[in-house]
Length: 248
Image (tube, rainbow, N blue to C red):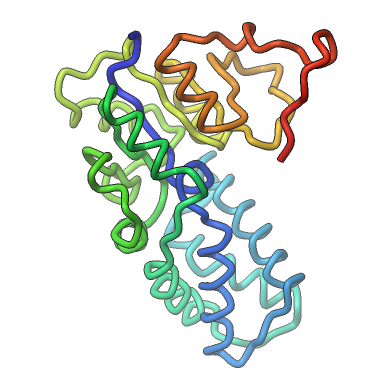
């Protein structure tokens, strides 16, 4: 088997960040007298996501991001609340929200029998540690590498270099990164020179400017790829064979 070490992204790959974010942002805003509806929560999520993309590109500092997202939210809706206070309340609430995506525990349990598993995640250390402590992955994951502790964010090569130094007998040629984010997980893996598996359950179109090793629709496909060496081009085209396409 080719892969001895698998680096697993957390949010959007193993953990349900959208549920955590939804609950935490509602609690934080409510403390400041704001009761957001579903549309406002989606707006916050879009603002937050755009700022994290800026962070990945080095265009904003993390400590600014922590409150700037709520400044932009309040400006958008005309609220006069204290954005920094909301930011602190949000971080505390988020640290208590840990949920696994369906099938994630079983996936890790199976894969851990054959590979060394590590989590590689961007985020604030106490938040990610708090969330991770509430899910049942400890028997399968050897260590969690959080960007807040490493000092660099994915996709920065220095993040991956630091992770590699912390993993005993690390070898690029026998390492795979699995993640849902093209901009942090896949770009980071490509730049660092390791194989990449894009967790892509919605079947989004592959980018033309990034050579990915594998594009998986499910945990089952990832397991087949890792354990059996199934290449992406071996997946049959349902248009040609009459097979049933993946649905989400």
